[in-house]
Image: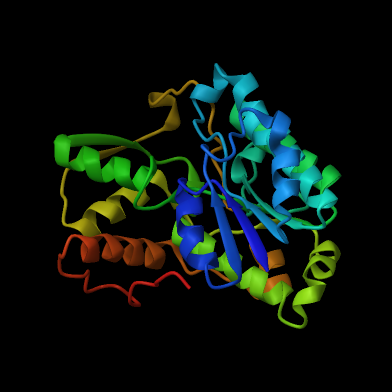
Length: 312
C-alpha cells in the first residue's frame, strides 16, 4: 500500500510517521510539498502521485486567531480537504481526515455521539465542520476521525504550555468548567494505524472497498473525564512541579473564540467497528511524560501503569 501523509510537522502528523511507516510505502508531505492555503493545485499534485490512501493530518488550529482569519481557516480546513477528497476519488484512494470536538456547542451533559447534530460556537469549529462536509461529499471512501484536547511533546498544546508556565510563574489561574478527555497525539496515531490494519486484514486489494463500506464520522479520544484545572494539576503532580494554582470559571478567562464547556466524545462506534479503544487520559498522560523523561534522561514516573508505548 502506498500511503500519502499530509501534515508531517503537526502534533498528530509527526506521530503518524512512526505509526504508519511499517504499513507500506510512506510518502510524507509538509507545507513545503503541499500548501493547503493554496488549494488550486492539490488535485493534480495528489493524482500524479497516485497513492492508495491519503491521511490528512494538516489543519489550521489557531482557535482564537481563526476569529480574525476566517477565510484562511476555511481554506485550509474546508476547501483543501474537499480538494483532497476529490483527488482521492480520482485516483481510487481512501482518505482519512481528522476533525474536532469543536464542531459541537458543548451544551450537552453526556458524551457526544456521531448522531448528535453539530453546532459550532466559533470560526475554527465551523471551518472544521465544513471540512467534514466537503470530505463526505467528495470522497467515495473516507473516515473522518473527530479528536479532542490533543497534546504531545511538540508544537503548541496545553501540556507544554503548563510545563513552561509552571517553571516561569509562581501562581497560575486555570479554567475548571470545561470538561473533556485530553488525548495524546501518539495514541491517535497508533489507533489510526490499527484501523488501517483492520481495513486491510482480509485482503489488501479490498482496502478501498472496505473503507467505502465503513465510510463516515468516528469519535476517537481517550477515556475518562476531567477539566483543564484537574488536567494541569495532574501534570504538575506527575512532573514534580508545585506552582500555586487557582481554579477559575471560563468567564474569568475571556478569549476571542468561545470554547465548548463540554467536549467529551463517545467512542462506542469506533470500538464496535474497529475494536479500537484508547486508555484513560491519566494513563496516557503518564506515558507521555515518561516519554519526555526518557528523552531528558530522567527517572521514569513510578506511578506509570504501563511502560511508554512506542510507535507501532
